[in-house]
Length: 161
Image 1 (cartoon, one colour):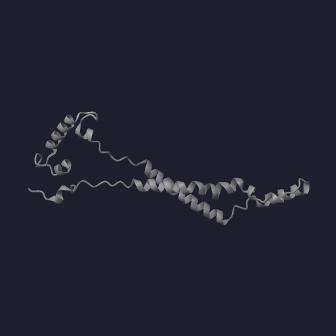
Image 2 (spheres, helix red, strand yellow):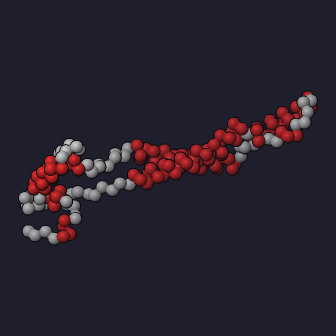
């Protein structure tokens, strides 16, 4: 049965082509981490741990007892001023984005690396083999895999290519 050109570049019905969509997950993970680490510091960590520092202490001119008490009351009054509706919404958005980051990480850690094309392994010769040895191995393998030598094997064309 003569083969036409199109059949040479099609896989059999049983083989499905494998696509590498891992780049999407790597890119998504990198982009999320680049944005989330500074955003988490600015939106969550800085207000919680350094919220009192944002109070304007420049009015503190003296160390008298009255001024000290007034500044202590002011610090107590503004201690949790960062805890408002805006903070809660931003924290929820950050939590969702961290969840997406976690899901991207789970997808990336399970990805198996693609097989690489190493001609020396395919031919069964050492990497430092002589050119004549490589040519002999190539000729031998091409004779074994040639479609004319394997007329009963429908995948012979794909293996030969």
